[in-house]
Length: 160
Image (tube, rainbow, N blue to C red):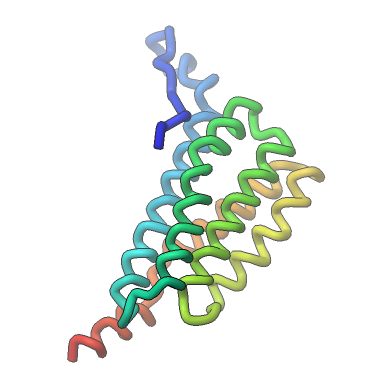
């Protein structure tokens, strides 16, 4: 996968020269956080699975496809200054990546269900005010940054 997001070095030597890079940096950081969240949860899911079968493999491919679009929609969002359509599409990619993770998991859970509902709300809200959708996407990321102890407990029980 080619990384389509590039952060160009500013031409000035002061902090004010970084201001035009704000949207690029913000969208990059949010996308990096989401990739980290998916990476960690995917790692935990695979450790919790007792047997990998075709369903798990296809769910993983489903997730990989949506995550492979993240650099593109991140760049599009940044380049347009968080315009409505790119922000909505960004939310759609996050939604479908979340659906892919839930497909690999054994049923939904609170965080997963809240995330899906939040993304579904964020997509149309992007057309009302993209900042509202962005706030929802940040909120979902914060929700997932809090570790889910159930997975850790389940893995510990399997070891015992």
